[in-house]
Length: 224
Image (cartoon, rainbow, N blue to C red; front, side, top):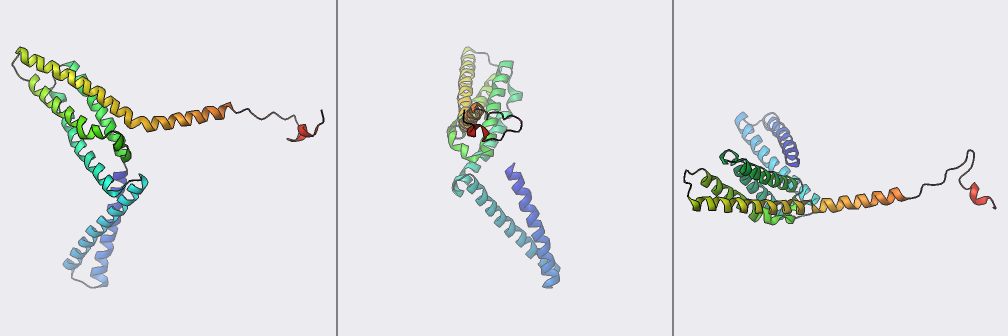
């Protein structure tokens, strides 16, 4: 969501600068219409890039990371998005309800991890293995499985290969579920802390009720 927000802000500001600069070049400086247009376009491109750099700096400071780290994570997210599209495209190629459910669960886990890291890039370091290995393996295995399952050959070796692939994909689902737990671990810990604090607050004794007309410190002054 933050990328869309920054995109809109960046281009709205750049368009405003583009219009203002064109009017300035043509009316204020009396440049030729075409030349003023070219200079305004150049101003638009430069301003767009400068605003983008500022937005990147704001983002990396928000997540307490370097610009190089942020760019690397964005690249990994971009590659992961492509792999997710490939994985999603295998739905129409599976031939059994069991395989469909397995693929559905894998897609669900992968998309959830992707969205969490996209929202909070620093969580990438909790699940680097997902981006570097697990998602790639899921795409490759699913691709080979869908290729084998569509073949008319029913030989025993093919059936064994299919069964082995299904079992490996199930193991991979379990691994990706662990990845999801890792990426949620900090949120779970934070929630536990808030719950503990809330429980402590609720256990605090309520102040004694005062009788009508009684002042708060009256009971301390009574010598009983």
